[in-house]
Image 1 (cartoon, rainbow, N blue to C red):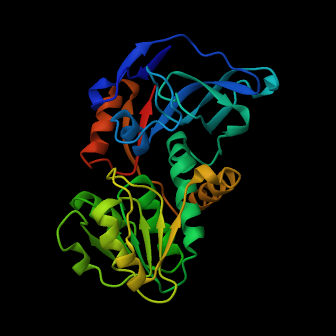
Image 2 (image 1 turned 60 degrees about the horizontal axis):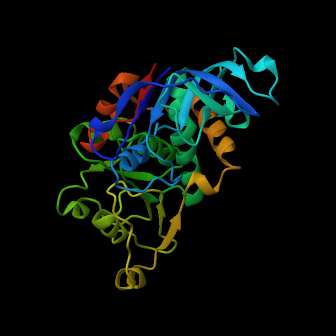
Length: 316
């Protein structure tokens, strides 16, 4: 089979499509013939050496954690009735490939109301957006700042926050992403890469923080009022969220971390909720670039140049 691998950390050009042996499904696993796989910014950061591989896997490495496709075979402990089933699921790594061994418990039948690409967009990013909204517990009339509002998670957060009755300020780099956020319902859009951007925003009660570094400190300064909170779910800049006591004490807003990684039992529930909202037409996952597996480097370059919009997908 063909798979995308890299033998060293570096620029997107280290990604190569290579012929490798077909995987064999182990106990309680499915062998899925991939129709498409999702691209996530964390994979870009690991490949570039910006953040360490949390699994500590040896090189060469095949990235990717999301897959949608058809079950081609099953391992021991799995009924043969699953063969031929269309599924969407997650793995710890290795989904940029034509065949992927997926834990049976992590692969759900594809909702007949969704196409493959929307299902991928909701699998991780939709679940994250739902979990973030629940964690923030947004009330009607609150003002919410959504960072990276043109991305897969951010574009869903804009819609979910509006659905909760909030006034939404969408932060995004570039006019195309700001226009997308406005089209999705954002009341105000701002380019947080520009100096002095906070002057265009005013006080907010909730920040969905995913950039880190100076942007996080500037966003924190906007939080005012009782119960103000910042929910942290990433650091796209590669810089940590560092709020010192000199800033924390005067503002007094709560810092709340969020990751699906430490909420594995809630992940399926969050995903199903995102799927239901999509099926009812209450939210719309934004599908950005859809590229062949051979263009994985192009997909990664788009993330690094901040031109990726919505969900980026690789097809086989």
